[in-house]
Length: 240
Image (cartoon, rainbow, N blue to C red; front, side, top):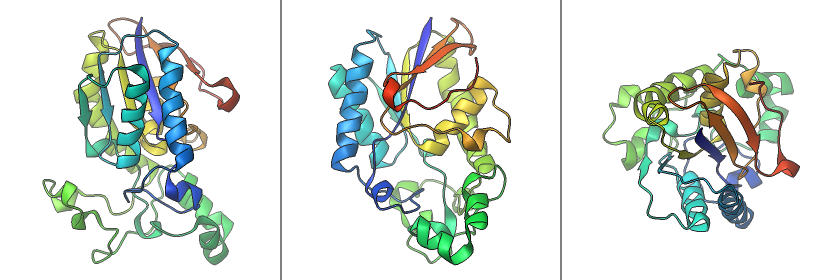
């Protein structure tokens, strides 16, 4: 049985401040550091020999992976970082306080922006500091391909091709992998692996710093079982 561990980064500074984060590169809080280390301790108890790991290019995910691998005593594992595993880009909402945004635009509109499958938020202005063209880590990417405001559907269209080409073949080949990423980029992977319907996936929640360990039938991408390693902080899972 091949194992895939999905880890949403530990609590970030803007999680704590209740702000839309997306592509903006914020750090972990002290609680987030603890969550990430605990993720590694929980994985260590599973006695899985992992072969490689993946993360986005955002430091909250990268640090979560470091701390997880440190707790596993596997800092030597090969790690690949790729921007296509980044969090969803929240467009012009980036940096805004979520409650203040509800007060201004109404609960229904904010719910649509956050939880609909195919409605993106307003695009970020090209001159805004939150536009990814101002971040040197994306200098190698055609500016026309950089996201400026993504729905979950658009996030899937960014994440899944990378998964299909770069990660899925390694799973099929029998490698046990860890992916440290974000709520929405991991939603994309869960949707694909579990076959979740478009209307259902926006409501799927992944708790921070709680590894989702997935059993996959050897030589395939067929999920046979899945569970959160911290049962006290678990969320409902799609049926297998």
